[in-house]
Length: 152
Image (cartoon, rainbow, N blue to C red):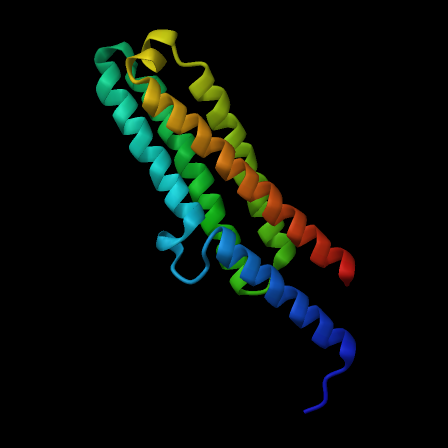
């Protein structure tokens, strides 16, 4: 079978992007992946915050924060799936959506009352740090997807 150099270069570029996603998000086992583990860490940190805050945090605030976390995780899994099929533009779209969900989550957690955040300062700090780590993952993967698109 003959393959020209352009197709080999594109295939190698897609493989490099897939490996980057696998390293940063984890395409081998979606729910054992570092990026998905960060999403699960968000849930755990928020659970600790809610437990410490007790009735100071409303059910509506809790539901909104958890839904935004779920949306970010869902979009990251969809980006993994798009990368597995070699559809890097679709992976870029899903990572943009994940980034939007993460930014929304940052806004929601920043909008929590001070008493809630102070009830477990460690959990609040973990929450903020994890959100910014996830944001960095999204930005790097998006840059890699764009770089591969420019090579074509």
